Length: 148
Ligand SMILES: [Zn+2]
Image (cartoon, rainbow, N blue to C red; front, top):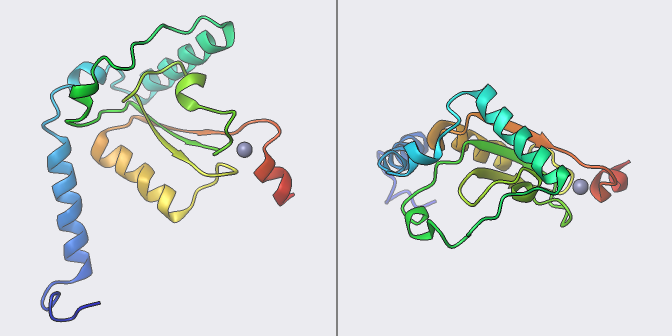
């Protein structure tokens, strides 16, 4: 670490300033009110479960993934965070029938929490406004089988 550049400035002050800057940059996102239809944890969980019911029934909504692309470059307002496995067979956006910008996803083989993953989930809740965090496991997980 360069002591000349950081003289008089602690790492804690830099982190606090950085989080404040991130929070300030996330707030003006105009689409937040439009996409944040799930204002409570119960409503967010219900939205996830309804999407999963559509996925299971094979009645997923048709989505135009290019629609809203320009607005999404301005910011994001996901309503739920998912801690899921990195397994290529499990795509949270598909399993919960959600479009781009709806889910804040942290993936690691075996879907366990690491310090980095936890920090991302905290960012999702504190800055982006996710209302629920779901830990998504699955059957025949290679990471879990290898660990066992
Ligand atoms: Zn897995």
